[in-house]
Image 1 (tube, rainbow over the protein chains, first blue to last red):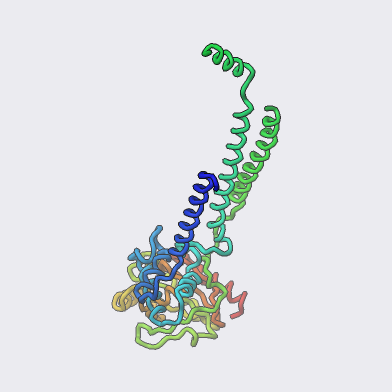
Image 2: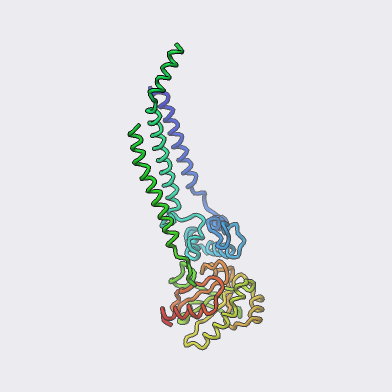
Amino acid sequence: MAPKSVNSKWSWLLLVVAAVALLAFGSTRSSGPKTQADRIDAITKVLACPTCQGESVYVSRASAAESIRAEVARQISGGQRSDDEIIGYIEARFGSRVLLVPRSTGLDSLIWILPVFALICAVGTLGFAFRRWRVVGSDSVSDEDAQMVERALREEK
Amino acid sequence: MNEIGNSRSRVAPIIALVVGAVLVGFLWVLVTAKPNTADSADSPLLGQPAPSVVTTTLNDENFALARRKGSWVIFNFFNSTCVPCVAEHPELVAFTKRESTAANPAELYTVINDDNDDSVRAFFSKNGGDWQKIRDTDGAISVAFGVAKVPETWIIDPNGYVRLRIAGKLSTGLLDEQLNLLKKQFGS
């Protein structure tokens, strides 16, 4: 029979794997067919209003945002382009600054890669530092300290 | 204890060197970056075929950009309530006068951005400018060119390729100067 602590570790690991798998499934599964209005909302929520600060086309009432919303609606009702193609059309006109969620290709991919790289470096550095502190801690009992402990133990007896 | 001290003294300079190199890199980028002093504005459409434009003029005539091939075409995105548009208007009037005597004059079109016909007619009857004004229903032309804010001026060559985008108010003589440069570069 395996020790209790090993079983407990496996249970936690299984729990974490199950949680990650369910989250991945939940975030990527298709929620079924969308209406035209749903598609317009979904697209305009990921497009930035070109004349506003930090507002999406979905939220903004600026003239440029209204024009983009009308174009998205026109292309959806035309039925010729997918959501990604419509976003690509707007990006090809206004440049990548119109995307609220940067692309994961080309130079834009650095936005996704750098934080992960920084996190790995930070965790690695911390791990390295903790390991060294532990080594320093275990080796750092001086003769003087050892004698003090010995004396205290003798006095206690 | 000494070993740990030695390894620390080995690692610390390397880390300091890497951090220092990154900072020097950032500084180098900042120092050597050139300010954008160009008269033209950037656009993914530059050097690309112009978007299809099919609309009507203020006089209810049909307009198709594809049928203007063979001429240099200038689109000026305009709104009668926009202050820089009003301010640059005399420059456009002077430009069309000068261009009318050229061998192959460029065709100037006002693209009406988020404005009504009556306001535009009133503006032009007061301030002059007998070139064509084309409607931009629902901002489709503005989106096709990536125009966010008026005024903007675009130059399209006789083969239908987008050659220049000028964002904001036109300064004196800028349009002539840029058009002449483009004509030399791409042929008139």
